[in-house]
Image (cartoon, rainbow, N blue to C red; front, side, top):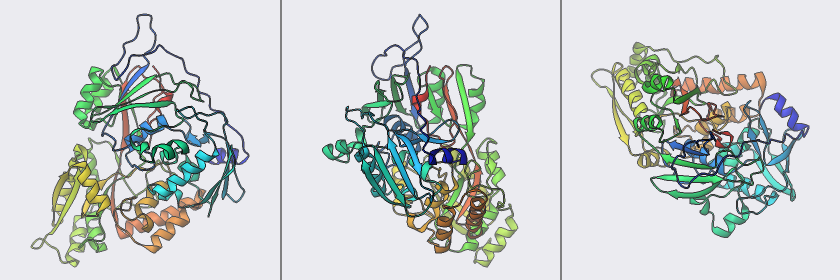
Length: 520
């Protein structure tokens, strides 16, 4: 949170966000796109393609970035991020932060209704935050919360055990969606997986597995009914199919077309293309618990053997910049002080020789990947680079479910390629879950780093601001570099391509979009 927005919140200045949108004509049912009427009235439907079908729609129990665009449409948060990157009140009418930055007092908007017509109150807020804590997926965001209490029906007090600069960003993330206590307790907690119900701009209609998820406008939405009345989310895993679907008008929005197709998209007058840098770092993750990757010199050798520019040129169509650390430049806390590993094959060979590997006894490793054309190309470049340093690499491409089980649940792998994205643009959101010992395994720390020193530095950095924050994260990232827990590779762009007539779209560094702000 920037200083200006924080100061305003501490003074309890309420910012009423009223989105005035034109109401358009009603649309037909389902996912069929409705052409503009002869009198020039705007369309009121949208088909949004997802790179993968969600496994569930409970935002507190998933980690699929594309799914969060759906849950942001259905649910609201106490605060939300505006177009200027500031965190402003949403379901909370006012947020007061104590002088010691440990007590957050939320004054709730009165009269906000869930989709079933019941009113949102403090009971729902307390229930939802405690549910986020209990689910565990957002441990990096909830670790600093001591307690959440109802003061009265429209006031909630949250107490932290220490100041935490990322609290406002956490509250604005999908993990802190506000749910109906009565709905979940009456129907069972699992109802949120397939039949979500919130206060958001859109109501859930149906989910036909393998085909589509459909939503309809909440005409009683407290910020004003959205201009687009019907949204269909369709899974399209193949990016070539996604491009064709954009060109034929079958879909209206698609994330991250193949880099090789970007010039085609940019030249197509029926399409609009938006790009920004992703709040993530494309990385080669190494499981430090398995031999010989438990040897820091072996991991350092891998880092020296990688030609990061060849990854950009050979696998990413020249789009991206060499990563100097495990923090993205889009995140608060990033600096250029930490230096990237130089490409030095001879240094890599020297380190490997010290570990017992050379041309006569090459090191043999496997990279496990889920089905993804881009990462397969990256892996092929890495495979060629490491071969020059006497490392033989096998590439194992897996079905998404099996991959998740092996990498996240069981830790059954040696190396993998990932791009862990922040949930808000802050170094904390990128690093804590990836490298803190308490996030071991499925909640993010797939490298299995169990360093007390590194975990302590991460905790300390979370409390810092300004220049002290930069200094603290420089120490964290330098330690990650020195011990080579990962090979940070490339800072990538994230893109969205839409039908040209779609308004209100702005490239998002997290790759998550609030469709309630879109219109034709």
